[in-house]
Amino acid sequence: MTEQGKLIAIDKQLRELRKEKPEFEKDCTELLRSINYAANIYLPKQRRLGTSLMKEAVEYLKYEIACMAAKVSEPDLEVTEIREEYTKERKECYREITDIEIELCRTERLDKDNTTKKAELLERRDSVFEKLNVIVKKAVDSIAIKCSLKTNFRGVTVG
Image (spheres, helix red, strand yellow):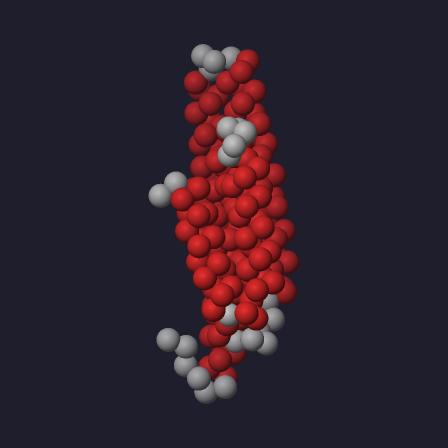
């Protein structure tokens, strides 16, 4: 599935959640605005930057949806520390992805025959996305563990 397809699927699920759970209307609306920004701003201009930023947006939404899911199962769950750490690490990756994409565009424009540099940049971009996946997984797992611990202390098992 393309990055745009993933965003469309997430968009649809968020709209359904917003209808089913009015208490998450504000959170869902914020995320839907993020999706619209990623989908409508970058892609129509046919920027190469758009696909990478959209891929990054999908990773961001995975984390945000995990936060919402945790709040569904445990309304008073506090994830501020996890959110701060995740946001800091994500910003570093986002800047690096943007820099790589800009450098790729410059390389392609100035020297179309330089395939070695392009390959290096693409490899670097892939490693940043791998790092981003690890950051997202760590944050989502931290939320799940915190949620599980909190509900287990009340004698409820999470299944």
